[in-house]
Image 1 (cartoon, helix red, strand yellow):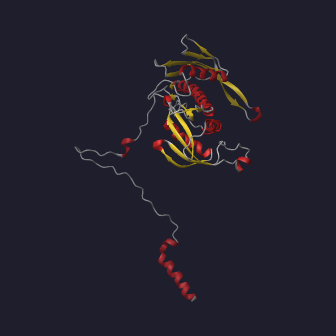
Image 2 (cartoon, one colour):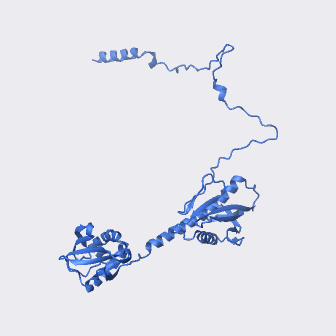
Image 3 (spheres, one colour):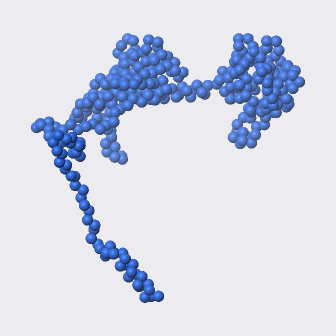
Length: 355
């Protein structure tokens, strides 16, 4: 068995050839470009060197021009009221009136004044129409040192002109920023055209951001406002006691669905053709999670547990009358309907229903 194993090893070595012992790297044949000889009168094919970039020798005294690889500064229309025109060459943005701005001109002027006041920069009106303004000097600094030895060294200062151009209809206006003056505190080169545009766009973007922040604040305040409730006790067209709202009947039909879960009302059936809900009412309980989180319990209606009907009917001035009936179809008394008013108003405001 030992001799057989040694023979197998020797045979495998012989079969492998010289590659087992040859340490010389394989030769590589360099591929050389063959220059074709084209007979006269025939077309010459494109050669690899036809698209090589030639070496350019600059005349004496001319310095090489270094390409500016900085990305262009862009106007960011981040406010909901702002927009840009295509192929705009000026540092300009358009503002449109919306639910947050009101009258666009006084709103934009107020935002400009707030922004520059927060930066401790003066803003002066230079015309009688209130459309052209000039800023005071805005100093820019550069941080030097490290840790506790950091310091701010003033580099330069700039002034801008801001021009507003409202449309005749008054629903939109443009804002254009122009760099008026620039001064260096330390030796430096004058700003080129790209630097000037970058400075103008930068100050414009900061004013747009101020407008966006103000719009967001107004939106939050509007959402936090208590919804107006038009519901009140009254009489329907037939003179029966009901709760009257100025909302159309179709709106009231859909908005009542928001109240039912909060009032622990279950809809057992409904008939849209006669605007009638068949409901079951059970007095709600506060529940475990409301107790441990110290939340108020759900509003309770002054009704006995059981089945009722809610019938809607059209009222004067496109309003709606909400009538409450017991399970036998008999109208609740005026006192019972009036007692329903307060808990319903609390629930309407809690869910933000339009009633």
